Image 1 (spheres, rainbow, N blue to C red):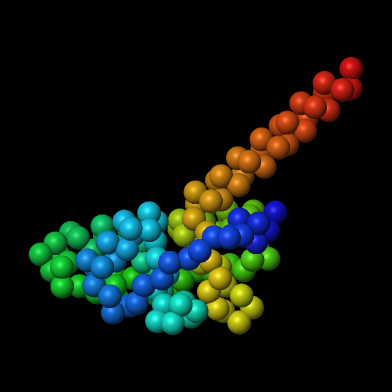
Image 2 (spheres, rainbow, N blue to C red):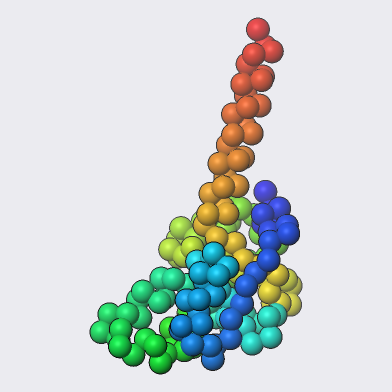
Length: 143
């Protein structure tokens, strides 16, 4: 199955690298998401920042966190996929790289959406359930 089926109608939230960590935490909470794509124009992926990045910035710097910006804690080396990537490819990437959010880009690198590990698991469970139901129907009619 292609990633395009997961991202249909799914909006991606972005934040500027110059935004404060306070603004970041508020945006994560407001949008009920675990990560935001860092982008100055909403199209180019400049980085990604997640709840995990905020937590990792805290030890020894809790008093400085208020004055920090997204650029201070974001991940710059972003792994992306395309809408034509398969769910299996994405599962492998997420597992191997131990990442939970992957921006989806078009052929020119422009941001289309984002896929979380939750999206992938939900899709995988749905596929397994469909296969289980198909096998159950096959067995019940084969008698």
